[in-house]
Amino acid sequence: MTPVQITPDAAHTLVVQVFKAQGMPEALALPAAKALVQAEQEGLPSHGLARVPFYAAQMRAGKVLARAAPELSRDGAVIRVDAGFGLAFAAIDAGARMAQEVARELGVAVVSVTRSHHFGVAGQAVEPFARQGLIALAFANAPAAMAPWGGNRALFGTNPIAFAAPRALGDPLLIDLSLSHVARGKVMLAQKAGQPIPEGWALDAEGQPTTDADAAMAGTMVPAGGAKGAALALMVELLTAGLAGANFAHQASSLFDDKGPAPNLAHFILVLDPARFAPGFTERAELLFDAVAAQDGARLPGARRMAERKGRAEIFEIPKQLHDTLMGLAHG
Image (cartoon, rainbow, N blue to C red; front, side, top):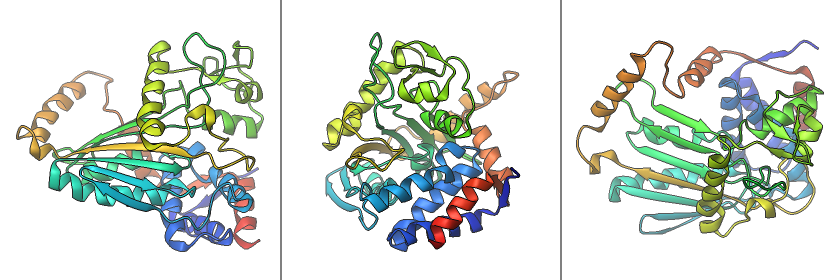
């Protein structure tokens, strides 16, 4: 089936229409649409428009509260954001706006988001800080998909980590990684397409390696770096759900269906103002970046993503079946 070509503006409008049709106010739909369209532009369809039908179904079922507006409170450098069982994007944006102000005031700000949903592309939560001259580090937990090292039952989420730092010129440094070998959304896309997955991505329900996407979704993801990735996933659970009072991964419902209660996930963002530390951060950083670039074949993290985004600035493709589904949801 021939893919559908669509402009970012048209895709953004379509996603907003879908969410508004489910009862979401436009002010909450706009940041969600922006995040999902940007994921497509960055070559990350597993976190892009393919998520919209899941979100819409969960709104209709009440698993996501379409009208939930984020509520903020501040205690010194700590900003608490209650997403109210809505989507994560408006809550992340609201916390980020306050965090920029607090980081300028105090040199540091910490955002803790509770009663939230899918974090989306983690790099999107930190990149805006770096473009304002700040450093940011973000974590999020997700429904259980990885076993603790040596175990055989899913207990931790794939729990992304993202980091962004300003540069003297050009785009920020951006590091964005899942603590599973690959994001679970990639397995979901393979499952929907009826395609196998590469070896090393996942284990089946018996803990055996599998290339079958159905078996992988019923089993567990392989942690990045083995025991080290599993240990980092535990750390993220404590910094997100532990601090926010939200669900740990094994308590959270699925992001891929409309069954059960709200997943009640959590996010954690640390923001630093480098101007409060030793002077000349960006200049020193460029010395390190230059040393990386001096090695043949080496590149800085995030460079590919920035190139993908620029390459899809005017138009990108989505599967026709997905486009037809979105059109139906927007007008149904």
